[in-house]
Length: 379
Image 1 (cartoon, rainbow, N blue to C red):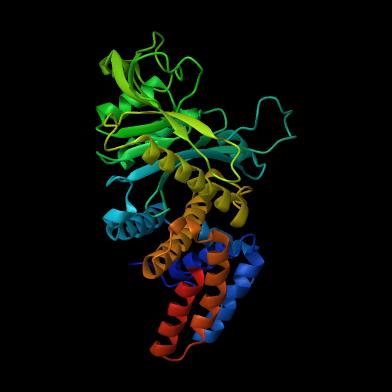
Image 2: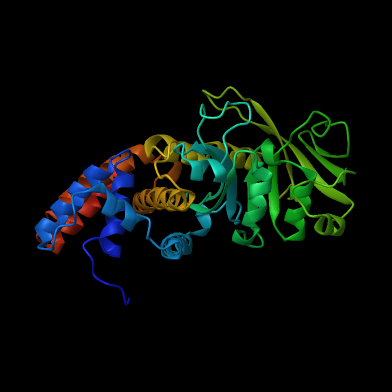
């Protein structure tokens, strides 16, 4: 509202940027040609041919508007979640971390310095990324970015407000520490972490619940955690009562046969070891989401030359990922197939081709028939 209708207006820049990210590696020149063809067909003035006006307009996209679109999409998908799509009637959020590289410019190097072991001029700026993913919808709901030197647990401290009471936080052993478990309990959250360390996975300690379960007590470590403030650390309890569970992973093709997890879910009747084994297996599948972003959408090497535009590029990659995941979720719901069996790369390829066909339809009936065929193809 109240903005000038330029050649590169907000709507055209947004959809051109989205198209460019969805093509996985398309250049700015190709994106401009796509926008010119669209404007020519719609009878609108053509945007300039040079890259600079498009890149400047892309740098003016308001981050708050992109965040609003992202939040609206995630909320809409979450509202349609049925009870059978939940794990033991609980929402599960997976936390995972990764890293991406950025162009070697002075601005990017100042914000995201390269590794200290590399000589100046021989490396690239590295961004560390921690993301929250919904197990029921597969969507990336929140994230935090920082320099390579910042630990993933420290970045995760920025995401507490994105978690709701009663949810289950699922993570690998990189996030398994006493402080995170205590913080989850303080915020009325539950946690399922893979155990890190031989001493903590010792089944000779604690109270025996069954052959694969132990009720153990973990005492607060003496040194204060670097990722938690001293005031908050002092308010955490001295002892945590947790459940140690040995999960059997007898899955063909998997090298790992046994995983030991620690959880704040103490009810072994409501949350048996078999359910926790299934849950941790699904976490492995959710790890592919970041791989899809980095490989299928080619996010492993970003292209923007300053930190502000890097944030816009990251947000647009996440938005395209969630839009494709929304198509996958709709196909799984309509045809009653497991969501994890729907291919992300296949869904992205189908969405590109069917999107072109949808633009050429002349009636609502043809458009609906194409949409029905798209969901059937994805399923």
